[in-house]
Length: 289
Image (cartoon, rainbow, N blue to C red; front, side):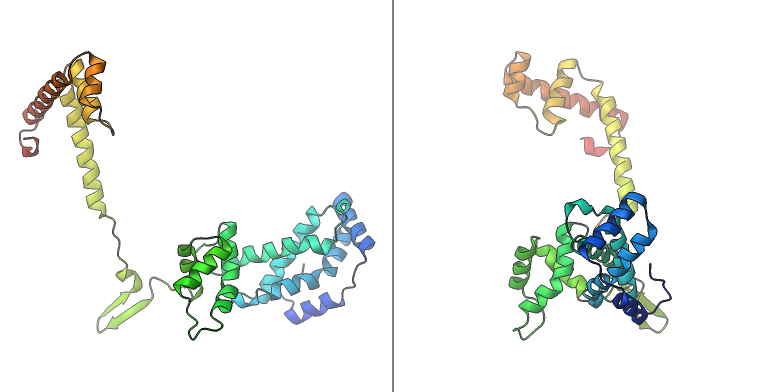
């Protein structure tokens, strides 16, 4: 594998000086590496295809990452292709290796282009690597380089993602990452970071904890109060008041063999017993009235 201290010019020169391989020679080298682990065979196979790695890496040079790193990652993909290549399928190694080289480079770009992880699905990856090209084509005849809503809809249809995904990716590609600790305002004796202006709509931690404690306490009170009810009263209250879809008076009446009016009377009596029990044990809780 090319060393990190080798300049790109030396890397390109070495790749161009490597001899081309004939079809049979290529298959023979791949077979030796696969069957016997012949390291010299792998070295020759890899060296002969480094020009392919460099050509593919050059297509991604506009993503702002070092070209040498792209070539190194492409070389990793080349070695992966060599380990998986099946000579008996009668396919040229370069055809097979192209996919692995490109995939390795793209994965490296997605991992290092931004500190924010993105493009995890295949469609998101396609959007990431095609949006610039599609945006340039759509805005070619436009006065502004800004994408319109219709343009974003067209990209979403072409790539197979939602319009919201296109809008988000477009905003990410339009500018570099910015630290939340970056100052945005400085006056005498005071300063403010970007994170100071972020709005969180979630409740404060003390409110969340307080609500949780109150809910737990009320659940315990209700559980104790339910012990005051008879078996039939408890069933009616549970099925009418303590389920997501409360049972109807008519259905409970049929199940218990009584009229729906009688069910209503038992329910009202049970609720009054619960209220009395709760006020008895917690007289300071006026909400039970």
